[in-house]
Image 1: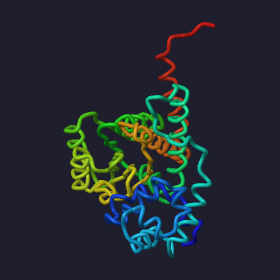
Image 2: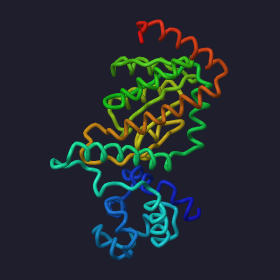
Image 3: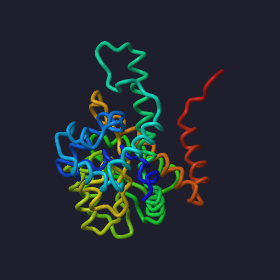
Image 4: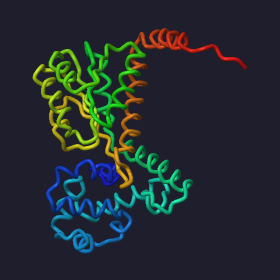
Length: 290
């Protein structure tokens, strides 16, 4: 793997892979993620000292990411840091921030989250996800907590193009619905961490029913990814002011939008379904004046 190919989405891949790293490797990764510009200028000894670990841990992490050594990782990091949008010194809001600065920080944080997720998303996995949904007898969508709005959006968009999709709002109902899936069905599981207990219980039911599992998550190392047929991993950097994974919601909604468009382009009757459902929507509107 060349430096440029390994560099693609480097920081996003680091964040997504954190749960699967050893404690020493994780310390190095967090030191890089915390101050990437300084990591570009640091020697291997400087970075190891900053992370409170050894140079061998830095080397192991570099190789795990697809580089020959730390020198190659630094080149890749420099390429990525230089390619990202210009951002405020900190994306975290402060009590003294003016409302206008808060607006700028939040919007630019969302923009950066989308840029980084795009670099990290696997296009081949995305194409497999589209085929999986297109060939499914039924698609059940499952989510809990802050991922529910994303799941609802996916349900509505897939419904608009005539896909055989369903979603249930309550966790016990989700487990029941998952247990009734079959080998020709797809369970679409959406979760930031991939570790929500209630969601994993529904995942267990869907797996026992031998359904195909499509995952949308932020972390490469999770029980959800381990059990999935296809995993769409969209890593997200969360600033500390974000309580319910706000940037995650924006990124996951963008992935759902992309799935919706790709599916509509491949599904022959999608245009008719969109026209017919638009008529139904228009019928709900009160005629407007000038």
